[in-house]
Image (cartoon, helix red, strand yellow):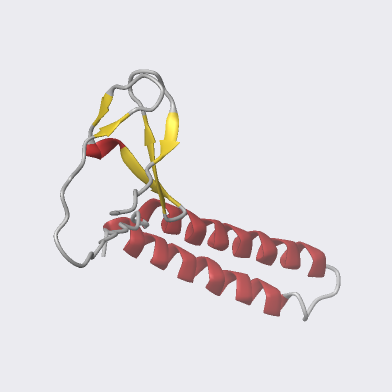
Length: 119
């Protein structure tokens, strides 16, 4: 665990503890009830803010690996831009909703890579 996670957990625990204490103390005295409930609510909101802050600072991006298994042998065919005819490298291919798209680095045209039939 990172130090920020440990310190944040301790701070949130202390804030929630005092929020509960102030909420319970508000039921004993009617004249200071609103100020104690307000203090309890503020402490609770600060605790939730710290939890959200820790979540967003410590989360890691998800890595998605897509693998394609084909039967038989495959040959790599050169991809060229249908607009300008420039050669496109394989690292320019992006998968969007399961469909491979390529953006030409020369003319900026985006097109779908289609598989031609073997016959």
